[in-house]
Image (cartoon, rainbow, N blue to C red):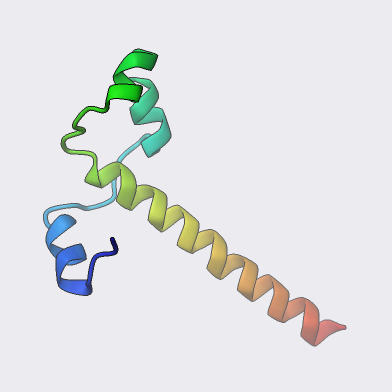
Length: 75
């Protein structure tokens, strides 16, 4: 199920994306067992980590687009 724009904005309210770690590193540092992951558990306050990862991916995508455009123009 995907979120619409308003739901996404509400999910990331009060987030600034200044997390020092990625969401993956955050999950690793939770020290959960394999059974916890199989049964499932609730993760709270992870929005900043997710937003930081999204910002990094968007930055890389824009950089790749600019580099591709430059290479195409240069031949």
